[in-house]
Every structure is written in structure tokens, then in C-alpha cells.
Image (cartoon, rainbow over all chains, first blue to last red; front, side, top):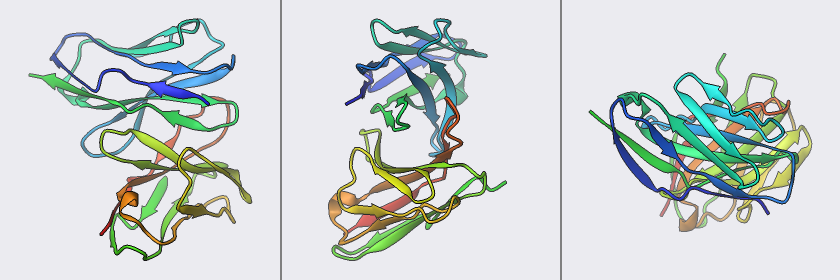
Length: 113
Length: 113
């Protein structure tokens, strides 16, 4: 069974700094998809970024980028020039081709003014 | 577009009562999902459906039932509610194409006392 591990329950960084959130996963499959979702205090889940396992190039969305290391089964999220609005829970998610989508426990990120 | 709509927003149940959490989407998405979110535990997949008439168990299906008679609706049924089912429940949908992301409802906060 696939599992997703986020080893950092909580992090704090100063505004404008860069922060990296870790995610590792366990799978024996070769083709799959990975996602990062953000959940601000409003509780609404928002897609941040996504990555296909067959693509070697790391995905980037404005200030958000990933470091996808397939052999190491690692999928970290880097937030550059962090903003107060980035304060939220961040969840890493794994989707195999059977369309099950499994989430990690999340990292609570605080951006400090 | 309304997106994914969940009702009710809040509910208090007594132990042993039953209820149905409603979820409907107007995006013509084939795939729908139910998750529960416990504090510090991330999201756990309860059931999912890849189309009308098709449902599959997720990580934590015990104590729940689902049906998918239409593309739009994916109700979650709780039979004989227990305190362990106190949680926030999220419904989500996606097109099912490749790495299409989940679109989430706003959640239902359920308390069983």
C-alpha cells in the first residue's frame, strides 16, 4: 500500500524567507502523480502544485517549486519569498493509477511578520 | 459555478443515530471522493467513486456507506454513529483525466456525543 510521510509537523519562518517542506512516499509503482495542497484557516483545500512521476523536470508555479527525487521517493515543496498569506497547513498527496489519492498528515507553516 | 457543495455545514449526533452527509457537484466530474480530517492526522480516504454505479473503499471505510446513482451526487451514510466518527468530512471531485486535481467542498463538521 502506498504511504505518504511528512516529517515536519510544524514550521515557522520569517516573511520573505525561503522554506522547504518535506514529503516522502512509499510505492512499488513506476507511474503516479504527486500533489501539494494548502489549507488556510478558512479550511478550504487549495491545489498548490502537481508533478507527474514520468516527468524529470521539477514543476514550478510562481513562488512554489518542487524538488522531485524519484529514486529517493521524495517530493519536497519550496516556497520562495514567503508571504503572510502562505500561513496554512500544507498536505502532500499521492495518486496512483487506480485513482486513490492518499494524503500525508500535513505540515503547519507559520509565516512570521 | 457552485463547484462542490456539502450539506450540512455542522451537525451534532447522539451515539447510535444515523445520518447522511450530502455532496453534489456541478462540474460533470466523473470521480468523487470522501475524506475525513482529524486534528493532526491529515486527510483519510473513506470511499471514492470513478463513475455512477461504481464505488471503492479507501483507507478507513468501516462505519460508512456510499452510493453513486448519478454523476452529480455522492452521499455518505453513517450508520450507528460513534464518538470515533467525530471529525470534519470533506467531499471532493475531479475529472479523472491524468493529474487533474481535486476540487473540494467546504467540509462538514460532525460531532458525535
